[in-house]
Amino acid sequence: MTDVTELAATVTWLKDRELIKAVPQRYARNVDKRDWKAVRACFSDDCYVKGTIAENPIDEYLPGLAAGVEAYVATMHFMGNQYIDLEPGADKGFVETYAVAYHLEEPGNGIDDLFMGVRYCDDVRRDGDDWIICRRQVFLQWNRGPLPRPTPS
Image (cartoon, rainbow, N blue to C red):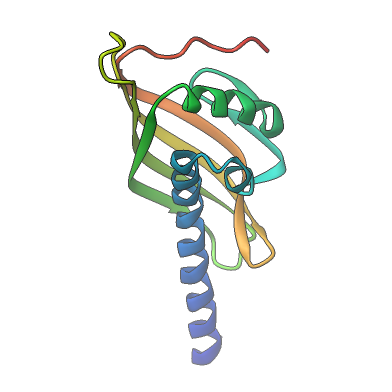
């Protein structure tokens, strides 16, 4: 490889890593904004999600997620450490993101707020000039407060 070719490949790889890192962050931001169209845009049409209380294809999963989130006065995701596995020049990769999700109840209603530590494990793939999640598994690391009940399939 020439120096110019190697430099171009490295720059492309670094750019792809940044784009991949942004997908879970964009997802969390839009969940907290309750912008479900923008949340949906983070996922491929064939994405399958195994979440903390349900697992389904993305278009079956999101209505339950939206209902669960909107049951709270507010939510806030704090995105932490990320690990990215991406081979140079690849169109598929993996990103694991640690997060703390705060779910706030109406003050004085007698129900505890819910705080959760989770890991989002996302298989991602190139989608034009960007990246999208094509498979997600969410691992609950810890929680404080009542977890929602699983929704029937």
